[in-house]
Length: 306
Image 1 (tube, one colour):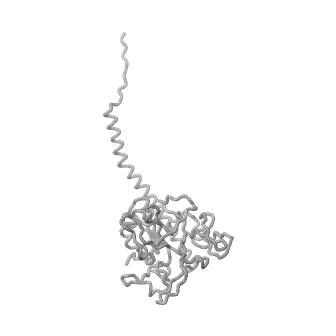
Image 2: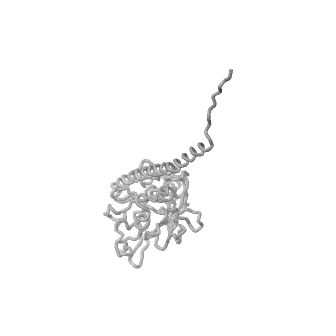
Image 3: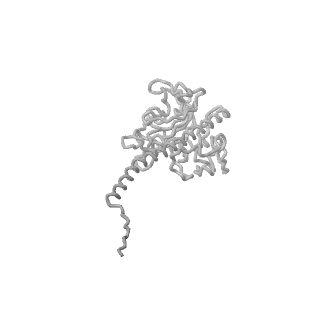
């Protein structure tokens, strides 16, 4: 008797290639969508953190009747006149002269008005080393960054480093404000050090294409200052005049700055790392907004709304 054996028919090569092609097309469509969704979630996280910072800044102002000189604090302490760099969970900058006792409770926002340290971090922050520190530069379009620029290759030219500033009497009448929490005279004109994870005080310096700006070695990434109560350094309002002969009134050092166009801080991680073409900005009236690169680069930190 003849036995019929059922045979299972497999996929042909053409069918397999067709399925693979369909999967590849779907992946090409969906992967960017998933990446966009993840980036939008990270942006939402940063904006939520900015709202927390705003509430903390308000509490600080109510307590001190002024705005803090830094939001998170510096990565510097001083022991017997010697600078020391530390992890942020070890200590925050100690503005004391000739001390060997590390005091983590100096009143910037962290651990007082801002209890959650995550509020100071960006959703796109890649640094995980708590001891990683960096110097920072003034943005080229700020008064303190005058004379510096970013070339077509995204390289900083003639950058102005953020340093500790002493009070300076100027014979022209435009005296300069010093840093009220400079710990000792020997700090004057030396670089301020920040924690890389602190994305509320500093952040990537970006160019018109959203690239992270580097130093001339083409390797070292440049961090820019994003928060300071005093962008000009001048002690008198008569000296806070821009090139259009308008006063730089949108600074936190003034008693009643215009809240709708005075910037507390801004975040560039989502442009430099997330490639979103967006910059997050926090205003003194509590708004956290997403702005395009052109608007941000042409107006920050002082010209917004002029």
